[in-house]
Image 1 (tube, rainbow, N blue to C red):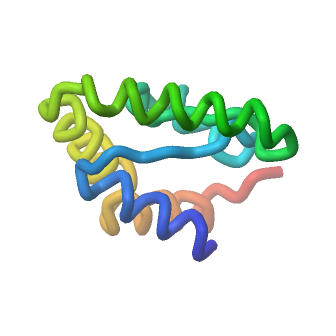
Image 2 (spheres, rainbow, N blue to C red):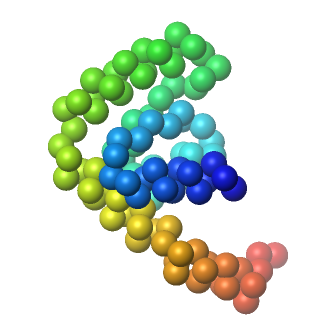
Amino acid sequence: MDCDLTMTEALSTALPMFLTDAPGFRFLKELGFAQINWLADPEDPAALRISLEEALGAWAQQPSRILGEQRELACRLFSQDVQIEKLIDLYEDPPA
């Protein structure tokens, strides 16, 4: 849970974000977080280094407005009100 909260807080700052392409993070791509800098699997240090260097180069060229859009998306999808509503929905209609 702490990792998820930290990730959500980082997204909402409108600062660049780097995540490894791990299964627990991939759902963000489907939600529209296209400006996350996706890094290689950390199990392959050489590939991770290359992807980090490429991500840093791309970040330096990234328009700042895109990061503002990322913040808006994070706030809209993960706000406290939205999370409480999802929790209430789970209690009212639990998965089978």
